[in-house]
Length: 132
Image (tube, rainbow, N blue to C red; front, side, top):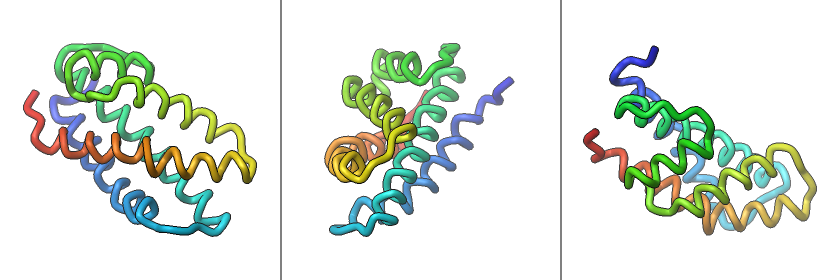
């Protein structure tokens, strides 16, 4: 059973993961290895983001289990505002995890930097002042 403050502990882990992710997102050019690293950092941050939301929702009395259900409930509760982008990021995370080729990786970098990173950074800001 989760403690009342499990979501806050998970949030601290999420914030820690964002430090390196933010540095990677701010880079202008990438070697193949750095590109792969950016994708991995996105996957890790995204995983921690939805699990933080899951724990927060549990604290608020919602027992949602899957990433998709968590995203939909967090959107319904007003914790996140870009529900469709969150669902796209979930699909992207799944695709990036199971498919790798150079062309896909280059497209992933653009999606991550321009679309997915901003929602993760916005979640951090939202949760810093969030009062359940």
